[in-house]
Image (tube, rainbow, N blue to C red):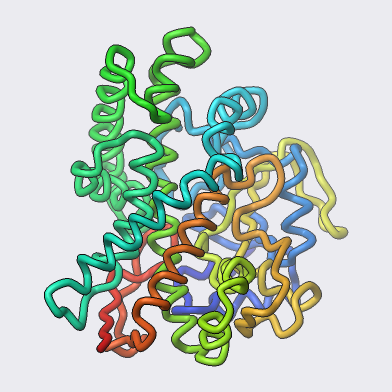
Length: 395
């Protein structure tokens, strides 16, 4: 039996695991072992990543028998999780949500997001406080409050769904615990959708309940799955990305000074931070449904594929000096949100949260500093890269 190198399971705080750069230059499409004898193809170059993610011969169906899951024993996917479906079901379900995530709709939320930022910082700095855990005080509640407001999920229940989110996204967790968490979360959300059917409000859950479930366009189980996906993805990714972005900027004082001097640079800086950090570090998973040639490599039907976004975003053939954080760089076209049919639905919301959250933080606390060395920070065990806490201080 051929022995393949394992997929890296750890990475430095702000950079991908060093194996990716080596593989990208030596064998950019190669076999790796992810668990047991499961050995999918690893895609490490930018153009190959975009090719695979745009090709519908690579299926996102997580119920496919050969799908390269992050761990063994993953149960069948629940209805409504359209990010792991193929057309036509993917198309049908995603279209129901698009009106709530357009750029124009998210732009209308800027005022609400700004108020959330200001309120959180008022609380964090209140009473003469000069230090805090930035994750607990700001980075986590910011996207959680924003997605709760958009969905119509009561924020007072955030502790419950944060706990279930951790169990569902951990790569080191017990599969039985993950299943129990899914059952509990789905029960909660199903009840919320049923209540909104009879007592709707001006929110996404109510619109799903009254315009989609009540009309038969979606089942209650599908709506529950969609809300679960939006709730978890809507806070998990940004909550992990935010503290890393803060650390990266504090380590780049020249870039941070430029942003403080010119607020118009923040949108571009957010794109560069997304490229540079790429927190979805366990790869986007696909399985070939036909034989496909990618850059001269034959990937056969039934073989799994892992697209390493963090490697693709550091491809030197696309980005000069790719390991450097350059807030003046044109990083448009990065694949931090994926590419193609399944590109992240909530990307406009994530951009707004990062732009407003970071600019407000650094404008209000211009002498913000870390109080623990980066090497001492505990990393998350999630499929989304991040830190569990970030002690900071200001004066």
